Length: 93
Image (cartoon, rainbow, N blue to C red; front, top):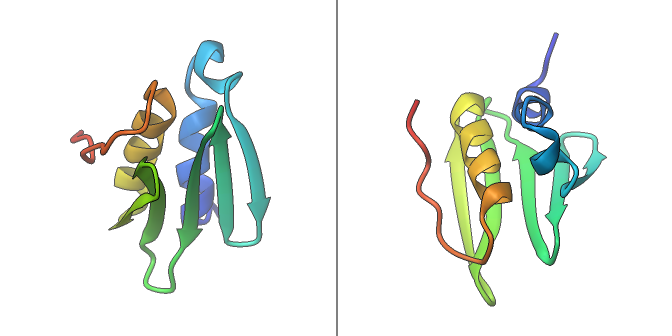
């Protein structure tokens, strides 16, 4: 059975090689850190089944979202595709 974190990280596997090849993932139990260049995104499972996605939208300015796994997956994909630090709205379906 897939965990919420498995579902979120699995969204990266569905991306084209041009996106996947620029991303490094380090997973530790129920959390993961996704790196792309100098950008870092933290993803962690919460006890209520939601997923926390934390990222810098500007230097030393952090955004934290608590989302269902499918929304967290869409946000993660949008975050790794950005070219610079910026705030990203959670993409709709």
